[in-house]
Image (cartoon, rainbow, N blue to C red; front, side, top):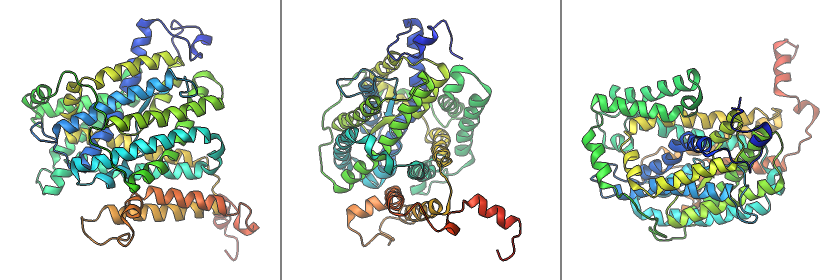
Length: 484
């Protein structure tokens, strides 16, 4: 229940209402705390896949700090575009933007083991994909028919399934330790740090209230961080070194890594833009329903999509990863009952300040990989759970079962077969051109394409004996009907 001292019930449902600053500032920072870990994690994952050195003495360490810095800065910029708006751009609703997990399965094959050299093509794809995403704002209302819960739920589930392996690898000690055959990989010490994070996160989520419950993952990571300091997995000298090696203030640099056109990157980012756009439509609808008790307008949905794409394109220019709306903040609005977009604007300004101070990124980077693993195990599992929740809206007749089965089998099968092989080993896509091989290896794009095409071309009206719902068929079999 909302605190009635913040404003009247009518004011709380108004996006243009601004609570008193002594209440608006904590509410804005609360939004940042709810998304902070999720926002910087994709940059760390992409850097790890590219082979960046994670130690403060590594030559790649400044690049890693820069990616973290840009994640914070352009999450704030994209959020401002949403909340403040300009012309048709921006929903002018309390939509929090952040770095998207959805694009990680596309980005990992693009950068795998290639270091800084891969970033020019990556950010070229981010820029062009962002512009394409913005164009979807002109047609988003007319293409939603092609993306029912059967398709979107499958895609979100596939995204989560593609990421869960990353969480386990991080919790066991990280990809570099695994690749080098280090004895510490998978040790009890590594797993203990991850388990501390998971246990504290679950404890805060289910047994605490208010800020502790909302920021459960962040609290869990702080607990894991302190555990690593207490057990010697992390030293104060290492933390001090990361702090001292990072600048106190730095501005973003346009095209820092150059610009390169890669067909695989452009196609991958443009296709995933559909998924991100649909996610944003859902979040905007959830905000309006949960915070204001009404449906989102066409202008709000189109404005949110424009802002989604524009925020991503601007981030790509300066070395930031793709942005999307953050679903966890939708739930936060429903819980607090505060619909004010100006509260979220305060949170956006806080993110921008953090993004301009690389020392913040330096401290974030000292979080042990095992601790981060405990956090992402929870987060990536929630992505899978969100996809399954979306699939619960599907009518599971045999037509939809076949579509889901074929798309999942091909997508997940390619993902498991291609992405888990050693470099240079033969794989199921080895005879395809490089662009198609990279796109196919994600598993997500083939699954999405198959589901969309089959959903559009397969007839909804099948023979009577083929359209019975699965639950009905099970009931008849359990009844022991003769001949079945």
